[in-house]
Length: 312
Image (tube, rainbow, N blue to C red; front, side, top):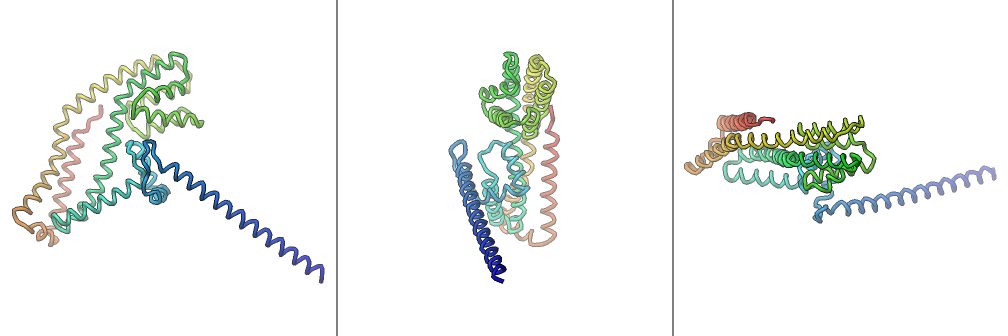
């Protein structure tokens, strides 16, 4: 009986010691994790340009969702100095402000309609920024191909040529190639790094350049002649795109003039007959007519934009 008591007491003391050691290890791990998160948060809260990031809590929670990850990729392609959390908060404030202004200026019915339009405009703004940055990148492609061709002809490896091009070129090509060089520095292959670049800034010209570099790197071929021919082709395509964009500028202006005319007509109607919009949207028939009109204006805008979109 004494032996059993001693065994039970010893087992109890050992269990308590293990529990205390486990709790101590758990507490130390949590403290180290909190310190690491604080350090990373402090390091990540300062941008390259010295601007301190805002809404860190919102940003961290948003990045764990699918929406946050998609938003992060889109923001990375636009080159904007915004985190997903900042964009989300700013967009929410803008949508709320547009809702309030539309409900006060027109009628309460137009509040949620304007909010939906504001959400669409916010996404369209990111697409426009990405398209503009992609266009600037495409204008730098001839110089990029020329630098890589010269560096390769001098006997440098493709990885080194990409790093030299990242240092020589201005933004956005310099920034994008710096990301590619960073990926290569941590052990990623040229194919993976360049394909990520093509996914971030989709264009046929960039896809051709990426395919040329990847195939030449994989097969070990000489890429100087191919890059020089590609440089001349890219120069010609750049001039062609500029001419096409100039010819279609009037059509693009018409696409934005169509919805502006509709909004102006609503403002004129409310100015001539004060309270007309509120009375009109007070009935289901009036609300249906407004929604149909907005749908037709949207359809006209999209249709005209499609007509003016010519891929060269």
